[in-house]
Length: 390
Ligand code: ADP
Image (cartoon, rainbow, N blue to C red; front, side, top):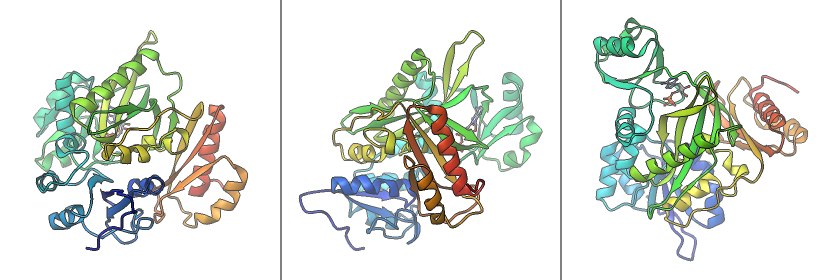
């Protein structure tokens, strides 16, 4: 494997396992900081491999490939959470600096482990149980009420591996596999929130403002930063909980806590944690244009144990709109109209083939009129998708 080329002056190489859009978006701040990135990419045309010169192709499941990749890097981090624990531990045993460490990453890989740990810490969670059979599911549903939410503990994303189950008979196919499952009460939430934290190995931490993540059919389509009209007590409680989770789990790098906000009849607000993501996260894409320090720059600073950057917003509001693939593969031809129509629009595309429903990019708009920003972000995302044509 050829070694990644370092900038003269003692600058480090950060290795990222996985060549998706998160690794790709680390490249602009890495260039500015003169840090060399190297990615272990799934394919030569992966999103990150298009923009990062050192991008050997290899699988995150192949121990030899991961080890020889990591030996060329000063620090190793991740584009996704799917590197198996055995491989993560082998990296640590080989003396590689890995952030986040396997002991932390397990809580983003395994939803049952996450529920157990957060419950131990006293962090509010939906009622939950580990089940392996129909009787376990039936008992949980009878106690907490139907429908319930059934989840595969590992490997889910964008709502895959999550389903609403109205009765024990509804889940025969999953139960037939004989594997353990996580069952949760179906939370009747007012909205979904997320809080993004960065934490360095020496323990410095920074928290961006809490955001509202708008979901459509299980996929995040829009993020409002900060979350409008958020109760001050809830804000303080969530921020405190996120920092505490980061410290207790010894998370390093950027990580996100996804939450449900619950409102009661008398206007009170509370929350439960949905899940944890230990990497830069879709709920933090707004920071690329809306915060003094983007989550991608912050992730690099954190994994290198450099001082963290200022997380304050640059503007009153930032709206992020995810661009999903539609029937319109010629994305560049959309630029002439979109960029002329809205000079304030910030476009971030990932170099991915357009496939219906696939996240292929996002847009950010910042300003003072939230309703206007939402319309502009929606319009741009729809135009890329081909659902509006003017
Ligand atoms: P993924 O790992 O695929 O992102 P999540 O656990 O975040 O899966 O669930 C996906 C979506 O399903 C959430 O964004 C939320 O809308 C819904 N959901 C998940 N858990 C619950 C729950 N306990 N109650 C109600 N809705 C839920």
